[in-house]
Image (tube, rainbow, N blue to C red; front, side):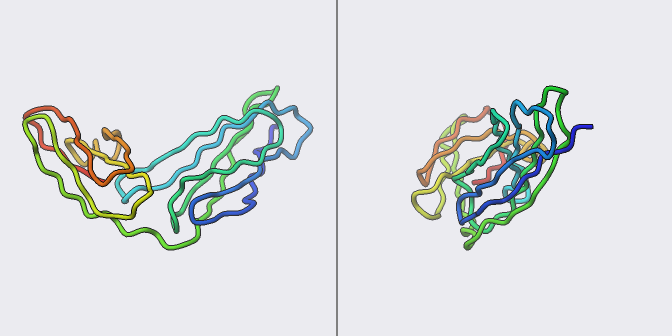
Length: 163
């Protein structure tokens, strides 16, 4: 039986998490697959996937949000097959930034100008869809470091926007 890998949180800050991965077995490990999950505005679960080569690994994940719960899951790729999943949870330190205040204005039939307030020097994600279900499951999205963006949409549709 292949055991799951051990995920150990080495450290965390407002915008990063460092963790180590190891196996408690003599089975040869070729690498790991790691998923980092977090929830965006209760509507959208985000995920970042890391493919890591080698047997032992210390990783640092950056560009995270302060005071946000993250779930890290990992499995090992071994000579005998994939291991079961293991999970850890960690909340980044600091104060979570206030939600931006979004304004969306139609420019024409196929373009919407989105603008919002919020801190500088961060990356914003703009998510949009024609229904709450689509907004949750598979929204269109774009990112920017600005406080505005023009989004191209289909004509004759109503859209929901989040930033």
